[in-house]
Image (tube, rainbow, N blue to C red; front, side, top):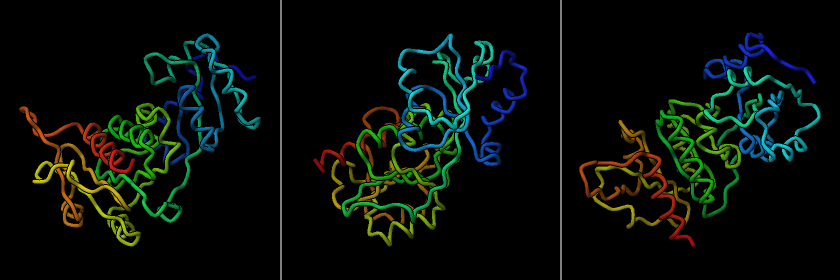
Amino acid sequence: MKEITSPSNPEVKALLSMRERRERERQGRFIIEGTRELTTALTAGVKLTRLYRCPALLRPEAAALFKAVPPEVVQIEVAPAVFAKISYRDNPDGLLAVAERRASALSTLQLPSNALVLVLDGLEKPGNLGAIIRTADGAGLDAVLLSGSGTDLENPNVIRASLGTVFSRPVIEADSTALLAWLRAQGFRLIAATPHAGASYWDADYTGRAAMVLGAEHAGLSPAWLTAAEVQVSIPMRGLADSLNVATAGALLIYEALRQRR
């Protein structure tokens, strides 16, 4: 097995470059760190090309992951100082891999007649995006659809905040105009969340083919989405704040929908 003992190794520099979105898109590759995230990625069929392992940091659960790694994946042992440089976590578990980006499109989605999806318009913070995807996975949503996103799905913080569930659930990026047209053609009823709505999110009907639509915290939903929505809902606010974090707001809508569909 190849070893890397120096943090100045050129391969380390190449790994660090993939923290930038432009470089990830140019190379068609991205980084996945952590045993749980890598296990989810492998289960979902994500193709790994290289796996970096630091024996001094490995935990017992890593043994099962090694058995699942395809033989064609190049495995490389790295020194603690090297892993400290390539890791983006405060408490790493000694595993980091390079994976190939996966192409996705709305045309690939195969959804049930009563599909429940989440539409996220213009989200910019990776942590929020990852947290909402994790919630969507927990509730068993059929898909998460992104438009105008200021971050990409392969951002390390999206992967970390989602606990790897970004790989286990259909998550697709599309132009907002194309996405809206697709939702219309597929017969979805749009439920838009906005602080200015008079109706509470408790009162909306989330059964049937429904798409819950949320926007970025600072800007909210674009006029196009608000105009297109059959229903606009808000979350009751009883304190000084006039809105919730978008990840929290998304969780409330998602689990109200799940309650109605039980």
